[in-house]
Structure formats: structure tokens, C-alpha cells
Length: 232
Ligand SMILES: C[S@@+](CC[C@H](N)C(=O)[O-])C[C@H]1O[C@@H](n2cnc3c(N)ncnc32)[C@H](O)[C@@H]1O
Image (cartoon, rainbow, N blue to C red; front, top):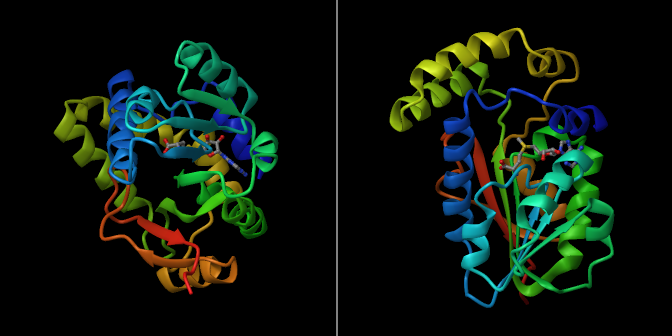
């Protein structure tokens, strides 16, 4: 769904303040690092967004590929991380060209909801090809059909209260209600999956998968899955 990519390429207001944006990426980086199995690991963050704390992830592994479809975001990633020899920026087309079995950990966080079911299957096929035999694929922040927007609101308010941006979160919710995000969310919607549905989809893509005990990021009502090649 290219409209979501264009949205993320625009000067959007998905983060209610600079503090929200900073804390968001710190929490995501912390959670990604927990999945890095060794300092030698090659890590791919698929549709990484602004990835403000990617430097911390790079410190925990040997090489971090930041892949992002939105060209403007990619430009900022290149500018921000050019001095970091452990970080490389890639388009999704370039990711498709990467060598088979070359990545230890692929993370795709808070992206599946913006893709059509077919786009997600195509991404799974690419990721499966890239993963080393012992590699892991972590698919985070997947929305469930029966969990409505109220839970997103509660999760954001709790996150804001915990990290000192509750007032901005409240103001942000009002502006989000009037924003392009809300209009797009209403018009094209977000893809949602039941736990069994996503497990089936990952199995059909050739992975062995299970749901992780906790989600990546701040929203406990969304799901994270951990997948790998099935071992004989
Ligand atoms: C909510 S952001 C998540 C960014 C980051 N992974 C994180 O956890 O903060 C959604 C990301 O999905 C990307 N995206 C949107 N639609 C997409 C699509 N159809 N295919 C691939 N990526 C897409 C956007 O460019 C954006 O980087």
C-alpha cells in the first residue's frame, strides 16, 4: 500500500512530541537488542522508519542493515548514520538483491498493518531467503482484529505518563483525530491478523513460528512473533 509509504515520507505527526519519538525509538532499539544473539550478528531492520536509536543496535551487533521504502526517510537515515561503519542503508529493492542466507536476525516492527496480505507474503519470501539456517525473524507490533483503537489510545497515554509526555499525548490524540493518519486509517484501513492466522501465514511462508510472550514496543495489546527455518 504505497499510500502508507507516502504518508511516512511526509512531515507526519505520528509522534506527539520529540520526546515521544525519541523514547519510542529507544524502546524499540532496546527490544531489538534483546533478540541479537551475538556481537557477530548481521541484523536487518525491515522498514525501520527513522530508527533514531539504531546506533545502539549497531553497537550490539557486527552489521546493521536499515531498510526503508520511503525515499525521504532513507535520505535522512543516510545523512544521520553515514559516519557509522556498522550501519548500511538499503531500499527494499536492494534488500531483495542481498545474498541468500546472509542475515542472523530480521526485525519487521509495526509494518505488517500497512501492507496488503500479498505484500506481506512477498516480504516473508524475501526474508526467508535472506535468513541464515539458524537465523531468527521477529515480526512485531501486529494488530489483532478484535482490539480496537481505544487500546491504542490507552497504550499511548500510559506510555506518555511513564515517560513524561502525557500532556503532549493528550494533545496529540486530538490532532491525530483530525489528521491525515486518521483519514488514511479510516479510508484504507490497517491489516489485522488473529494469532492463529498469522502463525498459519508464517508457516505457509516456510517458517516455524510462535508468538512471543511480550510485544516489541509500548503496546501490550499487539503481538510479536518469532520465526525461523524449520529444523529437521
Ligand atoms: C510505524 S512505522 C514503523 C517504523 C519502525 N519499524 C518502528 O518500529 O518504529 C511503519 C513503516 O512501514 C513502512 N511501510 C509503510 N507501508 C509499507 C509497505 N506497503 N511496504 C513496506 N513498508 C511499508 C513505512 O515507510 C514506515 O517506515
